[in-house]
Image 1 (cartoon, one colour):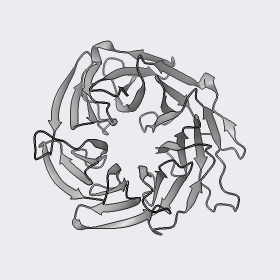
Image 2: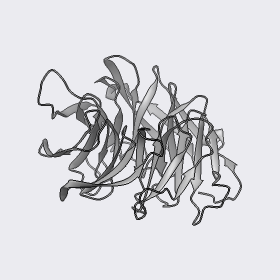
Image 3: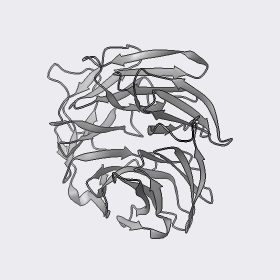
Image 4: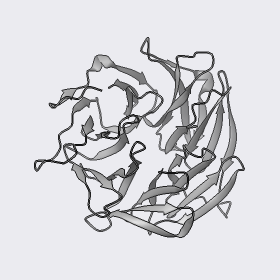
Length: 340
C-alpha cells in the first residue's frame, strides 16, 4: 500500500464488480483457494430481502484476470437475510471449504467444487417456538473449533462447532448485543445497544471489563473490529454517527483517536490484515476511506490517506487476510472488490 501524505483516490479501473439480482449485505472471502482453480478465491454474498426466503451465492475471483465468476450450482436458500457470513479461518488446503452464516440460528455449510451441503444448525434456544435472532458472530482463528455469536436477547454464546455443543453462554450486556470479535483463543469483546464495549475472558466468566461507553447514554454501538496485528487496539462505530472510534484497551474509556471525515453514518469498519496502522471504514456517504493512524494525532484530527466513492450507500466492508490487496464492499445490489 502506498503511503502518501495527501489523500489519494482508489481508481475505479482497479475495481471488479458483481451485480446481483437482489440487494446484498453479508459477504465473506475464503482463506483457501478452491482445489480445481488454484488461483481463484471463493467469495460468498448474502441477499438482504425483508422476508423469509433469501439466498447465498458463491463466486470465484481470479486476481490475475480480474474476473468474478458466479457458480449457480453453489447457490443456496437461506432463511432470513444472513446477518454475517464467514469462511473457516484456516488456510490449510482441504478438499472442501466450510462456510458459517448467522440469522435465526448459526449454520455451517460444506462447500465443495460442485456442491454445497448443510453440516449443522446450531440452536441454543430452550423453547422450540421462539429463537432470538443472531446479529453477528466471529470465528476464532486461534482455535477454529470455537465460534462466538451475539444476539438481540443480550447474550453471547460460544459454540464448540466440532462437538456441536455450547461451550458457554453469557448475559453480556443490558440490551441487544450487536457484534462480537475474538482477540485471543479465550478472549472476546462485544458491543451493544447499551452503548458499551466489554471484554470477556472464558477463564473468568463472572467478570467483564468495560473498555468504552458511548458519550451520550444509551447510544448503541453497532460494530466492533479488533486489530489482529496489534491486539491493544480495537475500533467501534456508534449508531447514526459519522465517527470511527479507535480504542486502546490499556487506557479504557478514552478513545485514542476519532476518525471524523465521513459525511454521513458509518456502517462498517475493517482493520488491514497485514498492517497494524491501517483501517478502512465505509458508510452512507457512499465513501470507503482508508486511514493510517499516526503515532500522535494532531490537533486538527486525522485525514484519510485514500478514498473511493461507490454508487450508493455502502452497507458492508471486508478486508480479508486471504486477499490483503483487495477490499470488498457491498452497496445496493452490487459487491465490489477494490484494489488497494
